Amino acid sequence: MFDHNKAAVEQDKDKSSKMKDEIFEKAWNFEAHLRSCLHCCLFPDSYEFEKQTMVQLWVAEGFFEPEGDRMEDRARAHFDNLLEKEYVVATEFDSFGAPVKYKVTDAMHRFLQIAPQVGVSYLKVEETDQLGSVSEQMQHLFLISKNIKPTSFKILSRFKHLHTLVLLCEHGSSMGRVPQDLFYSVKQLRSLSLRRSGISEIPISIGSLKSLRYFDVSGTPIKCLPESIVRLQNLQTLKLDGCANLVGLPLKISKLANLRHLEFDLRGPMPVKMGNLTNLQTLRAFPVGTEDGCHIVELKHLVNLRESFCISRLENVLSSHEAKEAAMTNKKYIRELELRWGYRCSGSSKSEEEILDFLKPTACLQKLRILFYNGSIFPSWINNGSYLCNIVNLTLHSCRNCLVLPSLGGLPSLKVLYIVEFSEVRFIDNHFRRSYGNEVDHAFQS
Image (cartoon, rainbow, N blue to C red; front, side, top):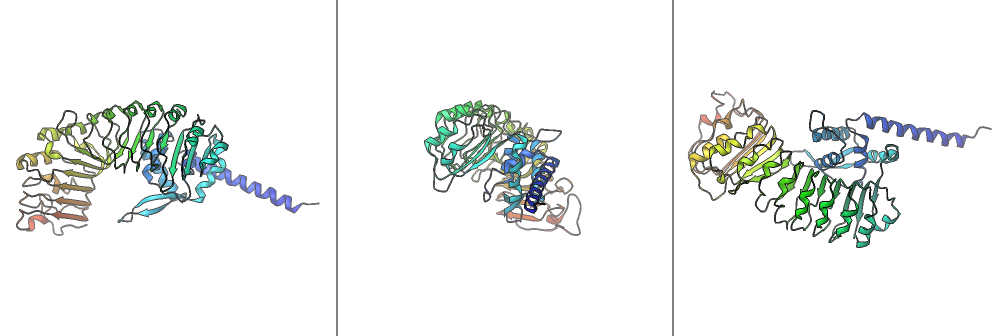
């Protein structure tokens, strides 16, 4: 006699198996590895993250090897693929409608069903009390807790094979200090996030994590990082955003030769010899100093800088030769650039004109801000529509000695223009509408 119920169960099993095979096959047809998709599953359904964060975590785990282009570029392409297939969705947008925050969908969490097939273990734990039942072979752990107790750290020290550890304290809770011996136990860690955990001090033993590539302590009350962190020769990403009590970076941070992303809110002087960090892609600002190792020439070999970058305290540039040595035209990945002099500084007008001339940016630039410039004229490159053909947004602010506005009408892509506090400019005529060397019938065509 035919058993309809048994047949239905077998049919469901076949469907489930086919679904897993389909997910597995599609995942490996992506430009990146299946493990990157599994890594996304660590995050809770409601957890919002930035694209850059996920890209950095993927690169830290070695999911993307360099093959003629940068690992981050391949990771971003893979992220866009996941976004297109709705495994990831945008949740927050900026004023221009561009997505800035994302979260994973239920479709992504199905990848956890096939994690054993690729020999990896991923787990989200929502309370420290559950840690006791977790396998010691666990490789990737996301721990969410109202209060991480000292006993929890003792249990964590059992996970000798841990590659990823994300500790997320709920709002209003804090973990205090991390015991010294924890980092001596989990030496295979590649990614460690203590973001907004309330941690007040990083133990010296952090220097024992020789495999660590990603370290995030953003939004914590730490005052400093131990100098032992410079032993982390594999470190790629160091995130210190929102650390309001942070007084500065380790003095010898320039020894971290593999550092690719350094994210922090600058409140003190920049450490010396930053030019040694030739792999840096993310460095939001460089304040020019007067001491050896802090001059603008440190930027010469930082050709991998990308996206947004600010050079401040330009009044400390000693000569136009120094400005030329910074080689700003070679930094082809920078899309937004800010050039800032001191607000109360009154340097030589002629000297600043020469310095700005040699700070000519890459032709790929899309957004430019020049603040507190004391020159009476601007260099010719600023209104060269053939060269700055990609400029969309331009701000000229508080250029107190400028007598004539540059001819900006011929910049073909310019959409947003701010000109603020040009106290010496007495009139604006057709010169303002001219393109580079020619009259234009329709100025500001974009």
